[in-house]
Length: 116
Length: 111
Image 1 (cartoon, chains in turn red, brown):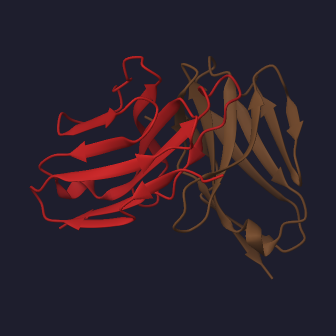
Image 2: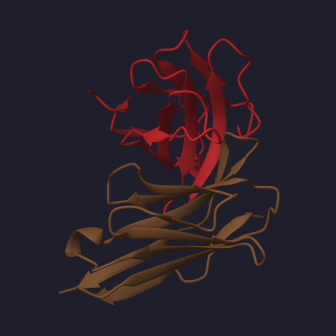
């Protein structure tokens, strides 16, 4: 079946503009994660959605970042008033339930965001 | 700071040789560990995982070793192939879902 998809694959924006990044998880996966990966670095956890539970937003770096998820489907990560330090690859992953119970996180290809 | 890290940022391996990639973690409470492979322009791809009640787990051409005494994790790749060239990340599971990643090791396979 189809994997995790993300759009757009690349986004170039000007400082101060808002951007929306989209993630389509694998069908049937209840858990969805957003990560940020700066150039040459590992992944930083941003936010986690599990079913209808309140999301874990503890990784969001500032109040300019927010994310929504409709049910167990599409998620949107929004960055308001973008700054140059927001430039990174934003990765989305989904899993059947949650990691730690042996459920692997499957990653999408990411959205490369460049803030000029 | 990061709770998971790798000992070497780069590793060059001759095709056909075995590769060993090392990882240190600092949170003794972590109970689930995963190795991911990331090729250029792609998202991380699951390789193998291991729970803290195990010391070793084998997959196809890969073996993960966990030493809880020294909080060390390693990934062994047998008969390394050109397609194994990538960045390898170890990750530990915190709170059962929040993965903490190291900076990664870049593996280059020499023909």
